[in-house]
Amino acid sequence: MISVEEALKKILSYVEVLEPERKPILDCLGQVLAEDVYSTIDIPPLDNSAMDGYALRAEDTRGAGESSPRYLAVVGEVAAGSMPTKEVRPGTAIRIMTGAPLPEGADAVVQFENTDEVNRKSSGGDLPQIGILCQAKKGLNVRGRGEDIARGDLILKRGKVLRPQEIGVLASLGRSTALVIRRPIVAILATGDELIGVDQPLAPGKIHDSNNYTIAAEVSRYGGIPKILGIGRDSVQSLTEKIDEGLDADMLITSGGVSKGDYDIVKDVLAEHGEVGFWTVCMKPGKPLAFGIIKKTEGGREKKVPHLGLPGNPVSSMITFEQFARPAILKMMGKKILAKPAIRAIIEDDVADTDGRRLFARVSVTRRGGQYRASVTGPQGSGILTSMAKANGLAVIPENSKGVKAGDMVEVQMLDWGEEQGEVETLPIVSIVGKSQSGKTVLMEQLIAEFKKRGYKVAALKHSHGGMEIDHPGKDSWRFAQAGSDAVLVSSPDKLAFIKKLNHDLNIEEIMPIVGPEFDLVLAEGFRKSKTPKIEVHRKELGDDLLCSPEELSAIVTDGSLDTDRAQLPWGDTVAVADFIEKNFVLKARTVPSTPRGKKVK
Ligand code: AMP
Ligand code: MG
Image (tube, rainbow, N blue to C red):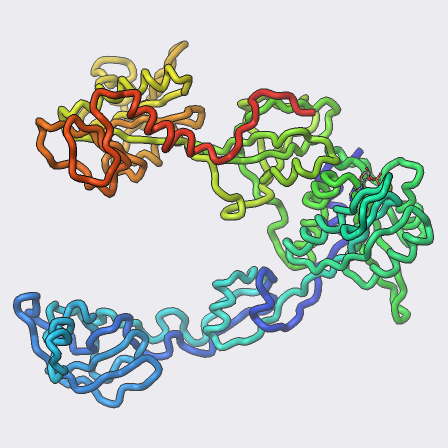
């Protein structure tokens, strides 16, 4: 049995970076640049205006203000795309549009909003002169020539992966093509007598081929060009024919026929054509794996095509693709980062690993309270492709670990990242705000008790402007802090306190990673400047006005009635306030279906 790392190292030692090709920049997305790109021009090519406004001499605006306009004679206008025909002399200005070259003599642009143009327009006057309402510094709203890119600079380096912004930079340099490492053509072949095409009706004993599709989509996703060869039958002749068709590709990926079954003849056929290795890789799913080099003579020269033989089970073939084919494709494309992005997450289920192999558990990762949580996506059989469809990551349970327990920290390779991951579950946070003496603390107490009664795990945060009661002078913790410790933790058998010196007032988002993710709801008192949902406590006796503006509030708890479109909840009716919070925040936050905790995974 070889390790995942050994298998990968061996595979990568047989694949080479492909040759470069020159092609239109729009076709280069995701490809690696194979040339250094220097600029032959300045961008912007000329000093120009960053605003619609008036180009003028800054010194002509000295002393200008809202109530003391400086009047300048308007001597012309210049639009983006044309050149100014006049210059700005003392006491004059030229009306200018964003992107238009700055006229000779001008050294600043004052935007329309800081002139009296708007008033003049509404009174129907044309503009022989303009009132400037602010004092301009030299260079105001002027974009300098070469400010972004200077002629002769190295702008994009060989090896750079081209994203939309690099493609835009190439366009701005006036380049319609780029030299990039070519995309690999990957031939894909499913094998098995039981397989039929997607468009064929099912017959007894048959199943639709899904591997060809999963693998082709994976190849495209990572930048290769898939070439589906179809379905090879479990006969030497059928496989030989199909594999021959795949030999003009840069790589061949087959699925199925590599285990110890009687009809598993992929290996026999491959042994005929070149070198082939059969590996038992220390991983689950995906133990049997074939890797070899198929030799072919083409125009008298010997060509070698790397072949990766993935197991047939749909989950196994996809996971082995991710571990071995993906890095091979990326290497051929000239990419340097081959590892999958991984995070550390808290696993929410027990996962047993009985046979000592590295286990890739399909998990759904969500982020709660600043921490990642990974929950197993149901039954984990290697034929259950929907376990992949529900997953956005693979939790890596190390070999010889016997598994992990719910609550353990695990590494998770992310299958999807960023926006593709969709909405993530977030820990609901609601802060209770209000004027001093409005009864915030009373409401907090009542809500905490109410939510505990409803079975929730609640964390309470308090924003304190002054000192902290728990930070008592004379206590050991206080003495440690006095001695200069930046953080002091006091841990007892049933409580933990954490006192840390701060150099700024934290907002709730910054505090949450310390609170941890295990709560169902965080109730905060104060924090009126935070962006988390807020409920204000309003009491008649403290006046009609509110502390926050109504738009910032989710609801108002009041003993009066206010003229506002915000939800108003009666002061004293804790159940109604708790219902509101539960319905709008606690239940809504659970957009990801949660799986039963602590179940065993085979
Ligand atoms: P094998 O590795 O050929 O023994 O296949 C293992 C399992 O995966 C069998 O149950 C096959 O029916 C299934 N399988 C093999 N190839 C495919 C495929 N292309 N699409 C769906 N299932 C497949
Ligand atoms: Mg088979």
